[in-house]
Image 1 (cartoon, rainbow, N blue to C red):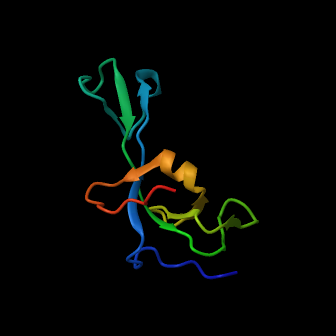
Image 2 (cartoon, rainbow, N blue to C red):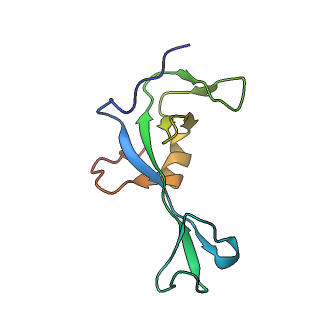
Length: 114
């Protein structure tokens, strides 16, 4: 298995975050913030606080070990290798990545259209 690149040290790795989803108050959990004009604890829509991840577009096939299953995930060129805050990894297909993630605050690079 090819060793995983260290995305924390890779200058090509992008800082991205999962796009927030508004949810109704009954689904409110710690980590959700009100979507204006709602105030904390009031009725309205809330957004999950974004979690930041590192993302690198694969240029070659790569098997990515994951802790919750025995078989590695197989990434193909064009897929995205993601590294989460807890140092776990996953692989996401390009179209799903583009629909699900957006640049984090301060990230000026964004992948060109597929």
